[in-house]
Image 1 (cartoon, one colour):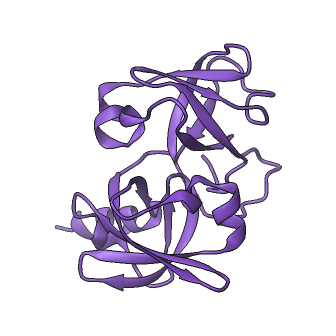
Image 2 (cartoon, rainbow, N blue to C red; image 1 turned 30 degrees about the vertical axis):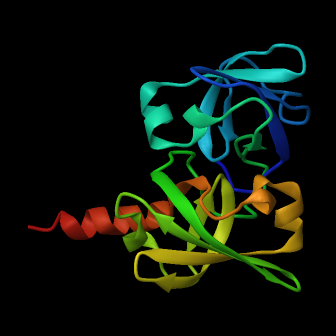
Image 3 (tube, helix red, strand yellow; image 1 turned 135 degrees about the vertical axis):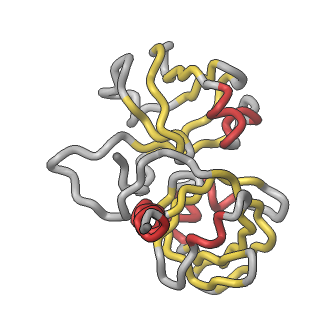
Length: 192
């Protein structure tokens, strides 16, 4: 379980089926077998090459997320799992990416930017005004819901410490909808 509060921006050393990410903070106490959220996807540390962590990507992970298309030099958001002593500063994020969204617009503001996203796989039904969503592992609040799209507002701090500050229209991002919304839908659909 994660919070969606990014601890470090890592850099891809090698992409493909074995993803190798250069990092410092997250690697400090990450042992082989540990879970790490990599741009919102919960992955297991498979190896600890010097100055980096290595993760094996399954076909499911490669097809459902953007991780399979990462190339050397690409940035990724990194977060270690919560502990019982961790403050829950974002929202409950499982690291189970539901699909991807495409960036439609990035519009500047004096105090940040607004990013409009078009989710895939019918995930827009989970978006509610002021609800929670994780975009590339970053816990965000939905600012505006439109037909088939939604907008999030990014403050300067988020733009600086995560990969979201580099988004441009056409980019694809990992999307995890609020787990509570999925449970509500599941419970409402199971009547009968």
